[in-house]
Amino acid sequence: MVRKNFGQTQQQQESKNKPSAKKRKRGWMIFGGVIVAIFAITQINSVAEQARLEKDNVPIVISDVDDNIKLDYHTNKREISAKISGISSFAEVKISENKIEVHDRKDSAGSVKYEIKDIKEGDSDISISVVDGKRRGDKTIKIHRQTKADYDKQELEKALKRAEESVKKAEEQSSDENISRAKSDIGKLPDGKRTPFSERIAKLEKAKQEEKERAEKVQKEAEERKRREEAADAAKTRQRQSTPAPSQPAPAELNFRSCKEARAAGYSHMRRGEPGYSPHLDRDGDGIACDKHTSILLNTSVRY
Image (tube, rainbow, N blue to C red; front, side, top):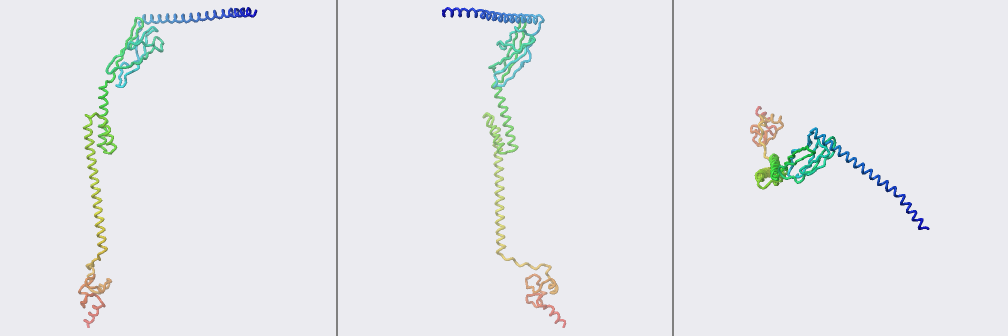
């Protein structure tokens, strides 16, 4: 009895699920129909758009593209971008034979981007071609990638210019720093290009060394001269200290006419050889002038 009831319940459940499965299937069919309808409408619109563009003879224009690209030696890839107008959704775009997808479609226009790799040295052409039904548009992009020879030549010119500037600066101001920088720049040159610059630096260093030696010689001579002068001054000082001062001769103004004049000047008893002594003041000839008023006594005795 239990088994019979269980079987009936299972059958009832399955019968309930059958309508739900049918509904889901119907829903998917409707959804698929909508998608097909949208696609069909889009295709119809695209066909109509293409037909209209062909009928109106609208040109395909490739713009906003750099058509003359220059690359240095170390760059071998470049992104190509362009705007394309006058195309339908059926338009096929190729860059260097590679099919490219059109983005940002609006008002019969769109844009493309593509990276060109392994660009060879020298000159090369990159083509953009657009085919839309019976209409076609083409654009050629010229690319010049610097060759190894041109790069080496350019780098040599830069190195020569740097060396010339640094050597000239060292010649104008021959500091150790400027000379060291000039030598460094010269060392970056190829062997065959260093000689003229090295000779100028060698000449500069020689002149600097000679100037240094002259300065040292002048300083040494000045120090030697100072040493001799100091030695001479010391010798004179010792001589003055060890030798008594010589007697000074009587100045001309001490040539008194009389003892009265001598005493008025503060002089008396001048011995022979001392300032103020004169034979006519030494009346008694004892070698002492103006002593003890002798001259006055003599003059008095004479009058009497």
